[in-house]
Image 1 (cartoon, rainbow, N blue to C red):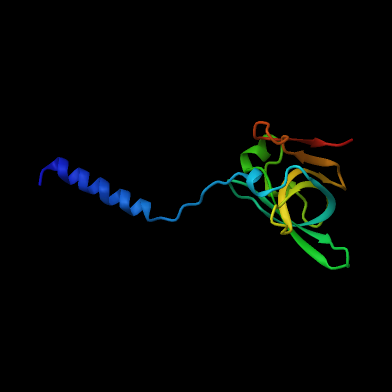
Image 2: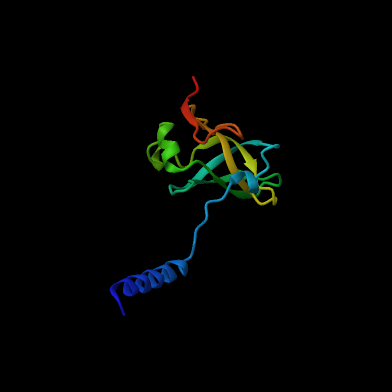
Amino acid sequence: MTFTHRIALAAVGIGGCLASLPADAHHSWFAVTDTDHPVLTRMTLTKIDWINPHTWLHFNLAGANGATVQVSLENEGIGGLRRAGFNTADDFALGQAYDVTYYPNRDGSPGGFIARIVNVANGRFYEEQAPGQPAGGRGGVIK
């Protein structure tokens, strides 16, 4: 077997190994959320998953019958949040109330994608660009 054949065989073997690894596809949030009917509600932030490709913020929402509903909302990735002035997960205060506008899941499950989030206590906000606009949002403080 020649050197070239060995290299080719090694490349095929490596390619086969890589192809067998699980893939984590990046999805479009437009496909799974209803961008025509945003929801505005006040919720309490309970947990943050500071991960890429999108961060996740988890909230408790007081349901109509007094029961608490857990709502998980997808958000911009870490890079986009940093560009908007949110450098770490600690920039979102756990246990505080937020006014959240989000695009709900099309399947009716409690969750969706954040369009705008405002900390009720200090007015600090983040908002995603409108649907159809380039990715990335902006942040600031409502005075």
